[in-house]
Length: 376
Image (cartoon, rainbow, N blue to C red):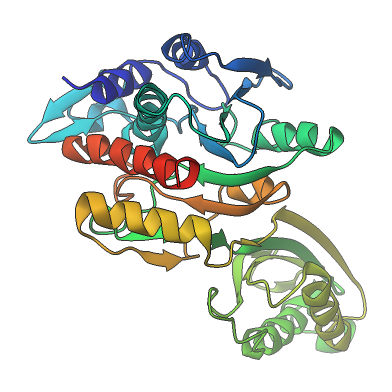
């Protein structure tokens, strides 16, 4: 068994359902104990956050990841215990195997091997590790970043170990993510008997006009890195339960996944103009779960692309697809943030797994990235 696989299994054995660390960070510290790392705990509301660094000089390279995992779902649907790492047919099964304890194991071994082989390397190496990424993410990496901002600190390069590969290991890296903007719209009318239309004001009809106009808007054309901004309704709730009563209001929940071509304020203003055209009385409440971030193609994308190609023979696509990640926080203190990790097809699912051979390849890619950045 390789060292990387051993550490991955030890991490998977820990029931670290978000936002609980349950000892994962202690394992990480123990595996780095002989490398002169300095540790700083930036815990918040019971969430464990670790900033570990080795060296003070530039360029600085940070590996970022999370030890928390999503709940298992029904245990009887798993073919093995989700917190008992199980090898079968070349795959390692267990909750967090792909998202993202194998990546953290690969970070650790890559750093150990790199520092042993290149003790006089330039620059510095660090880790951002949190136990609050899969949940609301308000007390996790965000708090580490706030600490950096408060102390006027920044970093040069950050590799986030999210599972980015789509169909083949190494086929995709992420150089950014779309922003998410959500809203709850309550359109108000006048409730009444359906047989007396002159005495009612149907908010469902008003909301239908709003939805129809909003869905026809082309918010932007995207750009080289991002697809067009998307607007989608997720929930509509109205009605009293009776078939002969028009309700007094209707609640609509919707979300934008937007590129860097739109700001939240621009989207809000355009929606507000449409709503005002069709509703005399309404409430509109906004929430910004995440802002977009983008790393232009450059040193870090080139380094990772080259390292992936050297190890796997695959040339990755540089993409911004998918949901969100802690990269959105780190981008506030780091101009070059790129995500790369295992195949993501099984993440958050029953029988989550990772290809065992890919775990060692991942370690080699992270190690080669350090060599290319800190030894060139």
